[in-house]
Image 1: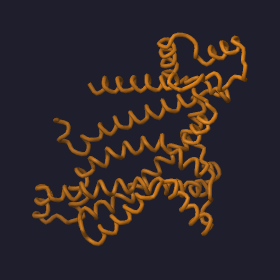
Image 2 (image 1 turned 45 degrees about the horizontal axis):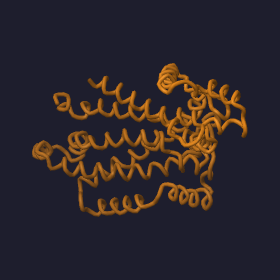
Image 3 (image 1 turned 60 degrees about the vertical axis):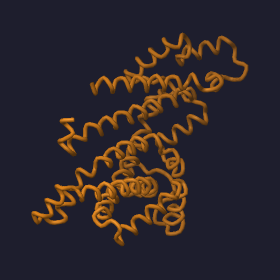
Length: 308
C-alpha cells in the first residue's frame, strides 16, 4: 500500500513538473532562437529539444528518458541537464546536510533542557533568542554574519566556494557563514518544537514512574523522554532537509556558492526552461523520498506505531 502511494505521488510530481513548461507564458523556443527565426529553424529546434508532437506523447517520452537519467539538454549551453545537476548537487547537499547537523547539535541540548525546566531562566533566554532570530530574514542574517566575521573581524571569507580538493580547512571556512545562516533558522524551529514535546512527555506516567524508581534525571531525559518526544522533530527534520535542498537559492546567491540554487537562478534568468524543469523534478522527487523515509523512521522511535 505504501509503495503504491509513493508511486502515485511520484507520478503526480512528474505530471506537474512536465506541465510547468506548458504553463509558462510565451514561447520557450523564442528564448533560444534569434529574432525572426525561420519556421524550419523552429521546427528543428522543437524536434531537438522534444517540444514537438502531442502533449501526452511528449510526456511519456520525457518520463521514459528521465527514468534512464536523461532530462534533456540545456537550451542555452547544450550541456545535458543531468550532468549540470550532478555537478551542482553535491554543493547543495553538503550545505543542507551540514546546516541540519549544526541545527540539531544546537537544538537538542537547548530543547531538552528548556522542556525540562519550562519557565526557568534558561528557558526564557532561549525563547528570547529564538524569537529574535526568527524575526530576522535569512538574507539579512547572512549579511550581518558577513559584516561581523568577514568584513570586521576578517576571520572568514566574504563569499566564494573552496572545493575539498584545496584542503579541508579552507573548504570548511568557505562553508561556515552560509551554514550558520541556514542552521540558525532551522535550529529555532527545532528548539521550539522539541521544547514543547519534551515538556509534555515529562508529565507522562512512564516518566513519573521512572523518577519514582530513582532513575537519574539525565538518563530519564535522554533514554526515556527524548525518543517519544522526537516524533514531531523527525517530521520537521525531513521537511526541512527537503526544503533546504531546493530552497537554498538566497544563501547560495548571497555567498556565491555553485549549488542548485544558483543554477536555477541562472536558468530562470536565461529562460532555460528545460534546465529549470529538470531541477524542479529532482528536488520534488528528493522531497517526496525524504518524507517517505521519515514515515519509515516512526516505528524506530516508538514500536507501538507498528501495530497501528
